[in-house]
Length: 178
Image 1 (cartoon, rainbow, N blue to C red):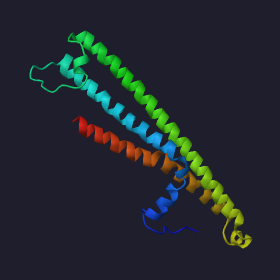
Image 2 (cartoon, one colour):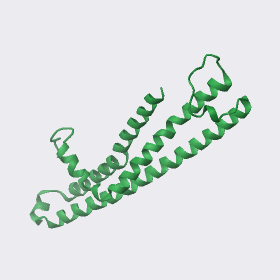
Image 3 (cartoon, rainbow, N blue to C red):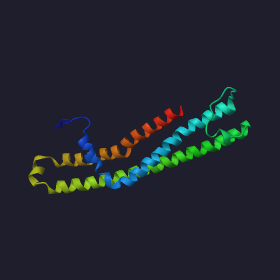
């Protein structure tokens, strides 16, 4: 028996209910958002360093009036300047990897805790149901729904929403850099 799709694509009441499972972990979510903000800055910094290397050392232009904030700290000698930029670029790549790891770890851990709470509540609900309910509904279908739906919600919390926010932050920083 194929189930019908009921409801609309986005239900704000349902989303508020689901976000309620994240409420006990608001500190971890807040730290994750701050780390995501810093990671977005690091993602945009790499191309900016490449721009400075090209504009200042590889193809210098006398009409270049735009200066970046790191220009006063760079050497005028091309080899020394490129070496400095390479070290800064390496720091940006390692920093970006670190912040991305911390953010992913925090959201995965928080999502697992929230989904544990949801699974526990679902199991309490299922165990409180009358036996006749299980006669009318196949147990395999119930177990499948409970496990796969909770896994999909976990993916939404740990990756989906974070990816959207991270992409919006990175896009904002790219627009600011341009």
